[in-house]
Length: 486
Image (cartoon, rainbow, N blue to C red):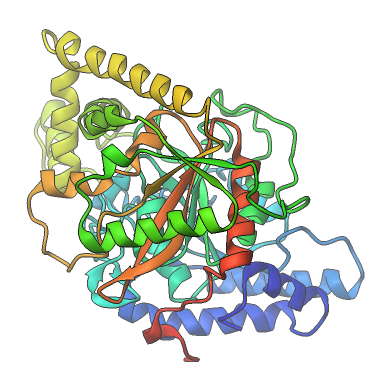
């Protein structure tokens, strides 16, 4: 069963070839055996999952209507609220916090009869690219247990790659879905900003964050997007678009499709990644697509722009953690000011403190004009550069990761870590939909290549990804260590 996609597992249940309880117990058992090697999960909802499974078995027996995700086990990144369960954001600060309400996507997932099996590990408050910033333990890569799973949604990616769950959800602020998905050899999708409700997602960078799915199959990405992209009146940034069908009318070929490639921006790729990327370009050519050289040289500024805007928004969003309203509170303090400062000092990790300091600096008097406002102007130029590129292109092709998963602890310089996000950040700055496709290997570890589409072209992007998957079978590789029953 671990080799099956989410859709195949749902059909297994609906055809009565396996009960929901059997499916749920199977994956709970797999988690109990595999996760101690990986550390993908922060909490498991065994009792609740089995109760839900028995309810679904009863509904099927009584021939009651069942949802699109019926009996599909899935995992949720631990910065998305589930009522009554802990939302720790992998931080000591929130280690005792239980959510008082469901995020909108959780309500959508429950309405469609999915089984939420647990919450996954991440870099603290989603700040990081390796999952090494978790306050509890680092998540490991299923392809190499000595390497990182990527971040910040490393737990969600590793859970899917090791087949502990067929589907998971994460958040993407600067590549936090796509980058770990690439390192783990799976699909990861960042929707257009505003396509999916952010209500109930713990905020990091409010103008950048988006919730999205991770899966072993592009069709599973499509199915999950049909569910989570429903309108939400609780999120002012949500487009509230009518529901769309992602799985019907899949195109038959790539003829008349134009794919833009910013070759000059890719000149410094290492040899293995460059050869892998060129092979994918050749595949698209052979499938009938036209490849166009586009100018996106302005993307070389994206790292600097992102780390000004994102940290500024983070310092504002994290100001609410004061040790009073919720979260851990420092003990034996003698004043309110001391309570504030000590609670934050004891609760936040090193990377979170670094970003708060940087964000507060760029927003401070005398520096806001020099840094933050200037960064917003360059962000506008990046948006305009993409708009110009899309005048002649249907999609833009970029690598997702410049190299395969690096060893745990091997990057100690924060600036070197930030550079890992070079190819994923632009889509967040420009609010574009982007999907990473598992494609190729470097040193026996996965690489990913991403397709980026114009705003609101999410359906078209996913449908052509499904076509690519169907033609080239990009979803067949499983991490050898976990390609077995446990």
